[in-house]
Image (cartoon, rainbow, N blue to C red; front, side, top):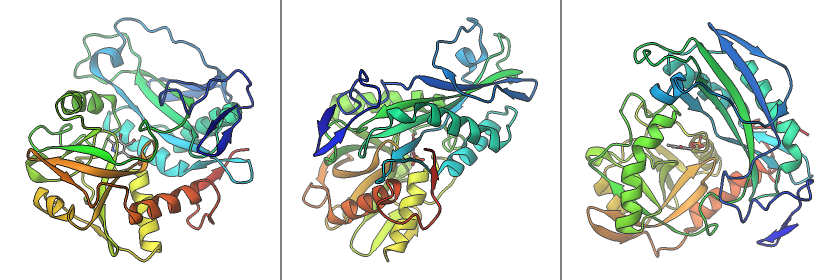
Amino acid sequence: MAKRGGTEYKSEMSDTPDPFTSPFGTLFGDHMTVANVVDGEYTYSGSAQPLENFSLHPATHVLHYASACFEGLKAHRQADGSVAIFRLDDHVARMLISIEKLRMPVPDGALIRQMIVDAVTADVGHTPVNPGALYIRPTFIGTAPNIGAAATPSNTAMLYVITSPVGDYFAGGIRPLTIFIEHDTPRTTPQFGMVKSGANYVMALGPTLDAKRDHVADQVLFATGGDVTETGAANFFMVDNERVITRNLDTSFLHGITRRSVLQIAADLGYEVEERAVTLDELHAWSDHGEMFLTGTAAVVAPVGKVIVRGDHVEVGDGQPGSNTLRLREALTNVQTGNSPDEHGWLTPVS
Ligand SMILES: Cc1ncc(COP(=O)(O)O)c(C=O)c1O
């Protein structure tokens, strides 16, 4: 049993390493669900199997042409000890869009949904208490052995779901993040930013590593030509006592499910909600009186304490997590953990 922040985490598996001290995403459940796809037909065995390695031909399509997409969602331990998945159907819907944008055969959403529920049910005992969770990673890869298929989709594929007990995404828990604003290099191509594909992440890696090295930044906020969008793994928000502002949706960035949840919660709490373009000048000016935060399944609601914009190191407010940010974070996690009523039907019970 490990302790953290006054909450006790006790896995049902006594020899399980502690997700609160292990880096995010490095521990795994014991199971996976797998469906094989041949010429557009999906075949799922109907139950979870032990987590095991794959054997792939060196010419496998995904290894050469990045025919891959994934999802990231969480199952949360509820106040009554049960476990529920947060916004399952919304994540399934987004994965269907990603598969379609890869020009691969799109399955019935009910299949992905069932595979997620089966994987979580099999590994439910690994679900830590809040602020930990069981992170769920549905993944789709093109598996045809074909190195002449640069302009052809793979005719075979694999859809699988694995789980990972996790603590905080950002080491150090809730702390003010330093964000470097990148205004030249885009995160990815404008038509593909909304796709949750590994190719997008590797494109963002260079600017992110450079900013970490040169500016000791935690994340990069991409604002190509001054148009503020998202970071490498989270959406971006500005808030003050009255308003919540985030970039309006288009194809250039990921349509975060946490983003959508926070917008709904903010509206429920009486904030004015603005989904619109945000310029670098506005962001700079906002730091005088407002707050900024990131949202994501992994990041939850993560406060921004400093932005590095056009070479200036700008403190956001007093540099500490703001009260509106913490209020929204608490409201979100209360719904996720069953401590507030699930008014929007966001929880799918598993155990
Ligand atoms: C690039 C990017 N943007 C935004 C998000 C936030 O999306 P969500 O809230 O659905 O996790 C993520 C998280 O996974 C991400 O990788």
